[in-house]
Image (tube, rainbow, N blue to C red; front, side, top):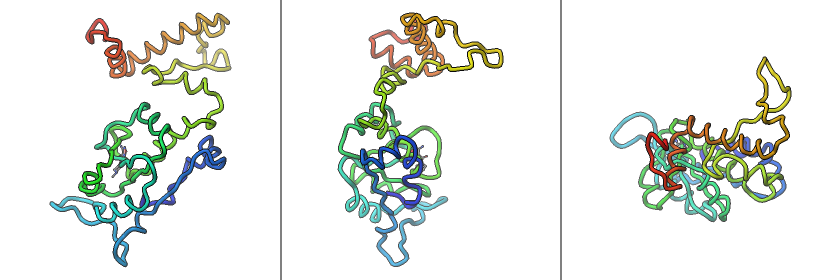
Amino acid sequence: MTLFPEMFPGSLGCSLAGKALADGLWRLETVDIRGFAGDKHRTVDDAPFGGGPGMVMRPDVLDRVITEAAGPGPVIYLSPRGRLLDQARVKTLAAGPGVSLLCGRYEGVDERAIEARGIEELSLGDFVLSGGEPAAIALIDACVRLLPGVIGDQATLAEESFEDGLLEYPHYTRPQVWEGRAVPEVLLSGHHDRIRQWRQEQREKATRERRPDLWERRLASQGAEPGPKNG
Ligand code: 4HQ
């Protein structure tokens, strides 16, 4: 549900998601919110009560589009005020019957429309987009790649970040030396157990250094005491 239906399928029509869409492994229905306006000028927004910049999407229009056009599964409003999207939520959505995404433009939507229908609010991160559409495309992309048959190699899916709350290990390919930088020796050794162990160490080191928040959560889930020793 969007005021800019021409933004879809966008990148979802390309690459793996696009092939899977063409193959009927998933479906996308783009609904133009403007088609649910109540007047001949097709008004969907108005000035904010209390003053301030920008325009707010009207709750009556939003409720009509949600009631008439939402499909099976949850209705989600994409907004920086929402809970942060994570891989666990993506997995649950991908396993479900579908999802209906409400894309806001301007300053956003009238709060009552979200409240009254118990709409879930999700954020992609602590930054500001010009509309919910790129966030919706990102959420759909994350879900679609988990659908059976979309990614050929299931090992690729299982090995990557967040399956166990750790970041990925670093990857290398040819040339073996590039701008004086050699590929780590262990990867050329052919010792598959040593390679596995090295990669696991790299994952832990990267998570500790780059994402202390994920590292703490992992320790907590293992029942460890957070702090300088296990931090
Ligand atoms: N916006 N994660 C403002 C976002 C956003 C985000 C979408 C901009 C909603 C009204 N959406 N509109 N960050 O920045 O999801």
